[in-house]
Length: 311
Length: 320
Image (cartoon, rainbow over all chains, first blue to last red; front, side, top):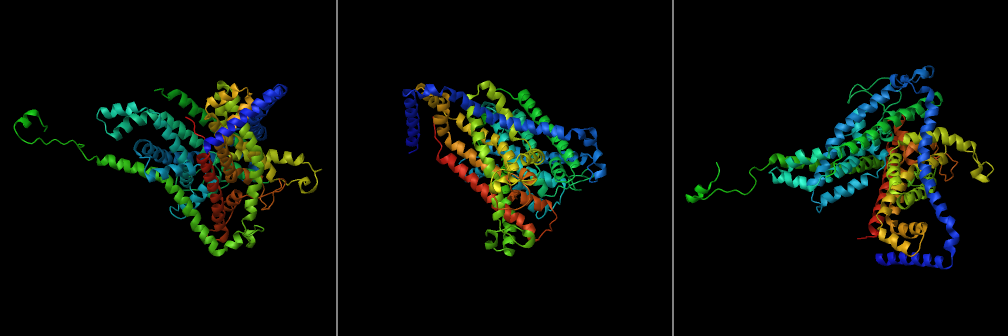
């Protein structure tokens, strides 16, 4: 039945094209092709130009606060001190959350990827459930992960309260599928001959993985992890859910104590203030955030080009 | 002590063991740990369902189902909990966003897959991927402080009726416009993958019959890749429904049941973030609304995802 529908498509298209040829409308419609391509190009340009517009607008709107004080000083709620208000606590908070995220998500994600690529029997029911589940998790809205964090890490279960590591754990849940998928690709790219050679020399399966497969796939894993981090670093919604606070005038004390905030949440809170001086700060914050992302992405691309091996 | 040939010749039974020399308990433990990590992803889903379900049940112990699903004004502060207005707010913004995102994403995908040369694609494809990774809070700020005031100042107030009213500072149209552009890369990259998977034999056959590039793209490639394209649309819709920061910042905070672009609306996601970010006491009915609304959101996006999955499986054209 599917082939029938498919053939029908082909036949319809062929008929239409032939008829068009015969009555000469093809020739008259020569402007159609370029016009169509122009429409298609517009779509791409709209998307790209919008990002450029965001950057340009944020640069102009935040220009007067793009200075070292922005990075050095603490945020202040007092309107009189807005001129020297900064976002040090948000930057340090982001850094802490990211470190907590890395130490949690990399071991978990890489282990899961190793299992799925090297050990899993893809005909068993539980492996199939894991596969379907990974696909579905990628489409769950980030705020739902925030609800998960609120219910189990902030309150209930772990009851950590609103601390840095609660944020790290919540974001771990969010980016774990991405890390697993990219780590699997990196592991799959290592050719089987490497494994066969190692096992032929008498190495056990785990030794083969540990000494041969993992070292060869590290560039791919690191690249994938950075891309996952660059998604996490811009997330505000899940962290609002677990109580990342506004106007934190100090850096977090440690992973498990003291309130914290991160850059995107800080930007959001600034944008919600009525005093427009805060909006200048928010625009400057967007530039800092995009700058951080640009650095991370360039590093990932450099890494991929520098260390990826052709087998 | 190893078994040698002379031992065998001496007439003793040789103790040859062809199995592994140790039981490799360590290795089994490692595999166990790896499986545990792999199962963690399932545990996340179970956790999400458990988190939503538990407190949603607690919500419905206080507020009857008929109240939650009735049509009416969402006003939890005075004990009115019909989710209708929040769903309408979400639909409002997603609908207008898709009017931009679907043609835009499809057009970008057709151009990338059918028109762009290999060299151009190598440059444009990573740019599209970068666009997908831009934090939504950046788009949100842009929509709130630049697009909304601009749209407001040029709003066609000469239009008759409701549409002619000048919007407030934050309104659905500003969020929808930016969200539409934001969703273009998502839809484009998934549809492009589907179009690239169409074998070139189909294209060449169409060219052989004398068709133009545009005819090949629209009459051969798009129908052949339709399952993937529909899946991309559905995923785009579910992204739109789940988007939080942009609508939280730019769409306003009034729970209007309105499909007008110049009204301020409150979406499900924005309500959840606003309530959790505000001062609410744990255990109050308002606290449990987060979970009840979250359940509706989760079921909607999960449903969308399942539809996308179904389309990909059911209508996929398979080529050798």
